[in-house]
Length: 111
Length: 109
Image 1 (cartoon, rainbow over the protein chains, first blue to last red):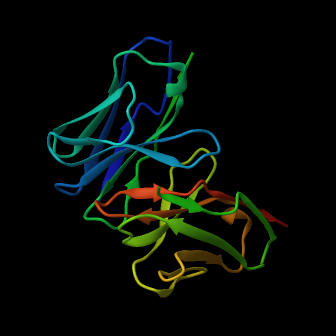
Image 2 (tube, rainbow over the protein chains, first blue to last red):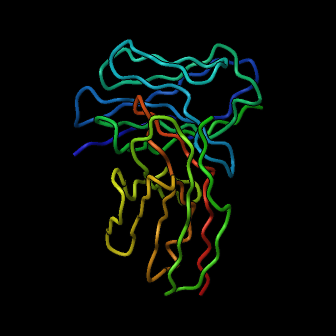
């Protein structure tokens, strides 16, 4: 069966510090991978998606970036965090364009 | 633009039936998904409708009408554990999921 992991689970970072969130998927190959952000009490905003190694599409211009160095690894990064980057970051995978399965998420608080 | 509209909150009692509506406006529409999210947790997949009609999975059913750009999630025999946020999400061209803002369901005893 397939599983998706994210770490860390919780992160508190000062404004201006760098960020690296990691997501890995097990039990499948060549998945589509996604990064979402969810503000409190809100829906999910798609940040990046990838259909293959090194292929990244950005949905929202911001100070975040994503990379896919391996088939089942997706990384979300920032060089300098802003207060507005606080939120719940969710990674998801899918095969094809139907069901997306979400990881447990990372709660980021920027102070 | 692309958007989905759903009620912000719904309250119902245990054992009752509740329907959460979703209207969508999106280009290249492929299908409508529903996700459940408990407080502090990640969204979990409930159902997916690519064709018009009703899909039933246990106590949950989902309906889609492409001509009306409308769908709903029906929850029967409500239980306290069904208290959660429910999101409709539309798949569009390119395989992107566009999420609604979510409906917070409160189940009362």
